[in-house]
Image (tube, rainbow, N blue to C red; front, side, top):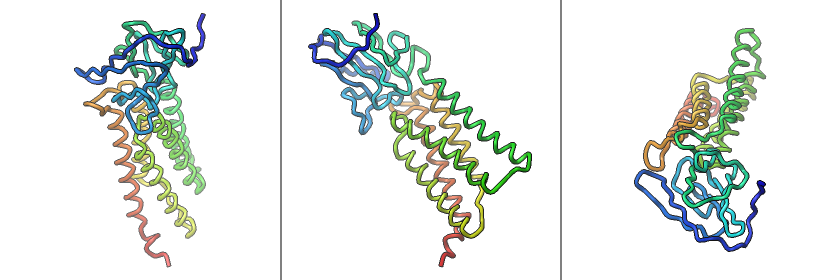
Length: 263
């Protein structure tokens, strides 16, 4: 009968993890009791930290029951797999020689397809709303303000989750948030003068790029490493940062008169 394994003080058998993070590199990590495994980043909180871009900050947890080790996934973004089978949040007993994989099951990916489908559907409906408004001549000042706001909330929600999981660096999310706050302030100044600043080309390119990159990060093969500690998902995060910064500078340059003539 399945049962949830809880941490306790029962002495455990001597055990050791052999960690393969990169080709030709093997690290050893002794198991001395209940502990967590996660990505080697600041604030991880995991006792066993691995240099792996597809691992979450706190990816999984080892527990001890009657001297035996158990493992459960801690709600990670990429999933955990034991001997090719995905592990859920219910603990499974570990045996000598078991292969525990993070983010892949043999040749497959572990990223949740549901998250990708939901995010892509939300982005598609947002684009469809704007398309129908333009085609039917229903463009309003309210829509010009709310439509970009919906894009921002969608992308920022995803980035906050990625930061929590350690998939995207904190500074990327801060840069995106800072850009939106600055441009939002610019729009507020313009509105006070009776002018509505709608999304221009750079803003649209920024939004499309951000949404594409978020979808890419949720796609299994984007967990592939290009080289040590740098995966395709990291490349997507850099692309988000570069395009976001460029778009913000472009907006400020185009509308700098709103600030220079303030008396």
